[in-house]
Image 1 (cartoon, rainbow, N blue to C red):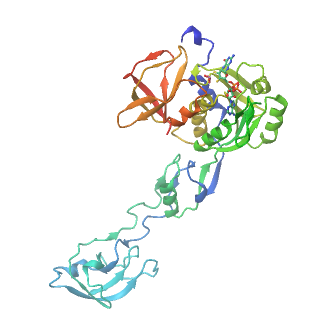
Image 2 (image 1 turned 180 degrees about the vertical axis):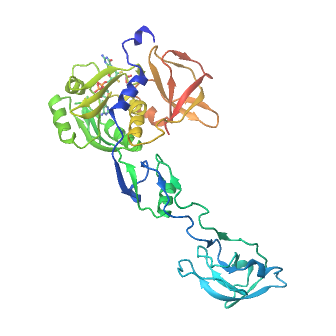
Length: 405
Ligand SMILES: Nc1nc2c(c(=O)[nH]1)N[C@H]1C(S)=C(S)[C@@H](COP(=O)(O)OP(=O)(O)OC[C@H]3O[C@@H](n4cnc5c(N)ncnc54)[C@H](O)[C@@H]3O)O[C@H]1N2
Ligand code: MOO
């Protein structure tokens, strides 16, 4: 580490600190419809076999395959159709010699039948059917247990529940699953210059944007945000805004008011109460706060919008994913080649916004390094991770990128 970064906390150390603030959230049983994207807390063993019984893969006729030997269009085999078996018929049937049962896809195959001949290979007749092709034993029968054996594991603990996983749970007859509750995050922006979007601005005012941005990032990381919008740079107002929510949230996430100015509301309100404010060897996102306030974990991000969102990516996204039980908490990383050169400050790990092109393996810069350049961030699909000791890179140099979308 260079002398200029001697007083700074390393990115990985701050990341570990933020992660350590949040344990995993409590496990609760939820109906399948409320489980999308949640993480399964325990493995799921199937109470049943899948399919639960031998059933037909085609609409046609259940037969003894041996009775159709030599069947052809010129010499069809004629069978008496004894039963009609639609899907959902629950009585147990058997097939006598010289007969067939008409059967539909998904219906139980009668005992004694060893194949289903599809209706297209017959004249479709009732109550007699003429079959004009041979079938092999086993044809068009889906065997019970072929997909899942009763008692075996169908979902591992840690599975992220999507359409296929939830469909599988329902298919084995399970209606609710044990999942980690999404972490509840109070999102609070600070700044006397902030105005709610939709209102007129006076000189010196700006629209508040970190609130919706961070609340959305929380939701994308699988958390449940509660957006308090913003409070002015006033310590009493800050405490008053926070107090009613402390008993119901897993994390307080603030933005703004953490650097070195005369009105740093978050720093002033929380320093000395368990939240530590430090400078991290990172650009953007140097001033950071983390700790506990009245028993609740607090993470305080810098106010500059790009600093706030990059800090979220680097520190909070992995922490929130870990809190909700996810095994894979990191963005995909890969090596790309720079379209153009860049400069980075010595002793600070720089996260530049980039556009990665998977077909060429090249990454172009999305805007400059300024932490106020939010429109460039909206153009980006990755962060270019430039190590602390690197101060200059040329076009064509390899860099590590984190794919953010
Ligand atoms: N003397 C120093 N000044 C600054 C330092 C420093 O080390 N010494 N650090 C700079 C860095 S780096 C950053 S990052 C910022 C962080 O400042 P704060 O966290 O105190 O944030 P604010 O001053 O409240 O705001 C910074 C910037 O962002 C705008 N902002 C804030 N909140 C929102 C919001 N919710 N929506 C939209 N925009 C927001 C705010 O208007 C400011 O322009 O400090 C540097 N200064
Ligand atoms: O670190 Mo600040 O976050 O560069 O703008």
